[in-house]
Image (cartoon, protein in one colour):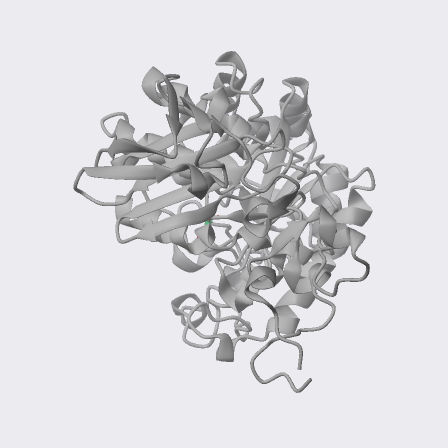
Length: 490
Ligand code: GLA
């Protein structure tokens, strides 16, 4: 039986390894994963849900879209304007056509047609240089239909008329969204697959038809993973057919259920790793933790999604700039989609500055697509490092807790030599720091220091695995035979 040496276990991927002939552990540098759509870097833009929930309308959306353009955020990369749950009036019984809440979206009937159309709305966004996103659900009904406290903003009519989800309508709805209405981005939620069982209050009240759940967020044993995958594959194929130029984003939203964290990279461009964020520090930690150890599941084309930004509300409002900055810095280190979730018509300048920090946006949008890896993890302190396409490192020092900390940052944590200088720029203050071997930094409660660093590579002619998670998929591409696994028989 051949055992892996400690050096091989460390996954030091040197160029010399190629020269020595076939190496079963050599990476192919190739991802066998989703490459359709337009997600070479994580999508950026705005989404209506965190600010408005289902009480969304055209004025609110266009107001935020206008501010994105006027403030210069569009030039910095924010371009998808995504309508979340709340736009649908129902499904017409005669031909199953989806109907829009025209009272909320007046442009959809501006041409006096009988059937409202989002085409004038998407035309307007496109004319502003932006892209348009829309929301659906994989089941018959959406999440708001399962969970909303009131039915004011929900689809109306018979049970069948209220079935606005994709179930049994995949081809028709996808063609409507992408071909007829001109959307560029689809978020597909999963409440319809789990929340309309026989005990659902909506089913019991006769407001929704029962759909036996095939997914349970709390139990993989009550989840039919192949059935869930089959639906997501079918929707993806329909999108590709409806948008043959490939200019789309396909966003999966099943919160880590059905073990999606492991397979989403083969099915779509972004995938939610947790349940919904709320504007509370503890909730931010939960969402961050759901993605931070999953660097090997993100790569150009497909990204971990710890949910939309909640900057502008609660613990991340203008009275909590430390927390708001941490939220933004951490999402950039995670290569998360940067989807603003606040009413930009009212957002104070201090928060606009955070959202517009071009140096931090550049980390999220770096072409190498390496999600940061954790290089130090102790109770309330995380140090994250990511390798950028020009060889620089992004470094984040994250104090999760409520006490200030003195932190020693080591050159070796950056995979830089300890005997050569490291130059760093603080991406909030733009201050320069230079050190050799290590430096001490004070980090306030809930603060994230974030730097771009340059030093001398510890490994002169190769890369550590932790430096290239966006390029290497060891689970699929790199290991031909699982040598050295406990229990292996040869
Ligand atoms: C779910 C999703 C949210 C949002 C709502 C809409 O909760 O996770 O992001 O889309 O549904 O109802």
